[in-house]
Length: 352
Ligand code: GAL
Image (tube, rainbow, N blue to C red):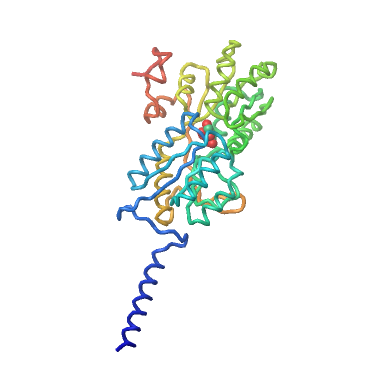
């Protein structure tokens, strides 16, 4: 009798162990399931909120994640990579299920990513690639295409055979080299001379303004200025205006900031690139929840990309080139900005 009872207890123990082991994914962390009331916890570390678009990325990501049963802890590193590392370490200590990173330096977070992975935490590189690190997803727009669009817009405005000045974004942002690769290819194909090329450290747009004030000899030779983003374009056009040159030199940028859209309808910026941060943030939030539940990320937009040492899942969304011809359809039609805001300074040009 005793022997049978002991055998039964051993069998029950074995079954319990078997059940417990099959609920643990290969990541070793408990699989969360919002339906059962267990909150998925996501940590999100932003480079900064100085640039207009990131506030929109944040708001859409948080609201989408909440709808999907997750809570998001948002941190702002204010452009400081050491601060961003501390934030990631904090999220690891707190046992987040997923950490989403808008990295300040694409090449300086390997160690933090490794620690997170060892703790069974999933990592999403949001909009900017983290190189040589085992991230679970890199989701962004086609950055090389952004550069190609900038180049094509200048060619369309007649720059072939002319001169261009490049006031690029932060050299530590992997996106910048991709944008510039696409842009330079178009410039080369159209015999455009690159007079100079600088990078705004930490995306600090004032670097561009200072350059123009200090290098007016070079600026006066330029037929166009390629700006790494619309924040830099704002500084560039402001500086040009002080020399009464705004509108006489072609300017391109990206992000479809409101100020850039205003410049486009006012004639002091040729184009910007609209990147639907709504779509990016929603898709990223959906993927974050799937990763937290140890689900496989699937979809027609899912590919893979090599980030140095790893082949990682990649989702690349399509950017849209915006100029005076399509700004109403793309920017106002999508609700990205209101027509009253875009045409604030030229109400006579505002569409019905
Ligand atoms: C880059 C991004 C650009 C722009 C920039 C900051 O990483 O690709 O779209 O947002 O950051 O303005």
